[in-house]
Length: 101
Image 1: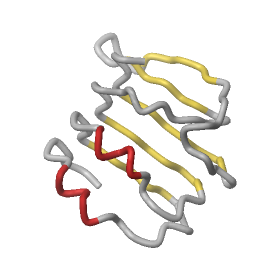
Image 2 (image 1 turned 180 degrees about the vertical axis):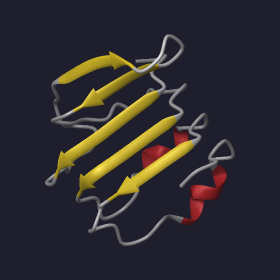
Image 3 (image 1 turned 45 degrees about the horizontal axis):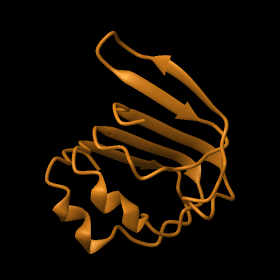
Image 4 (image 1 turned 135 degrees about the vertical axis):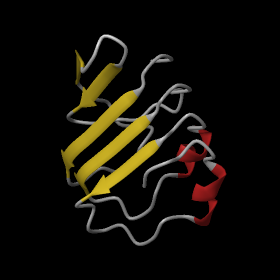
């Protein structure tokens, strides 16, 4: 998905093995300029060079995955109701495009 700009991961309480999971996806576009992808049973492939928005909703992540360091175009990272999240990593400030956390 090299031109993917928006990714929403929601209601995945047991998400583990970030790169190894298989998923079923559905695509919708929220505007003519923005491609969006909603992954409901979720996975993550680290080749999203144009990803601007990433939202997690009710996902039991304990840590922000190290692979996120490669999301250099990321402008918004939303971690909503991720109650198991222990900390935001120190390296988050290396995402120089990030405007909203």
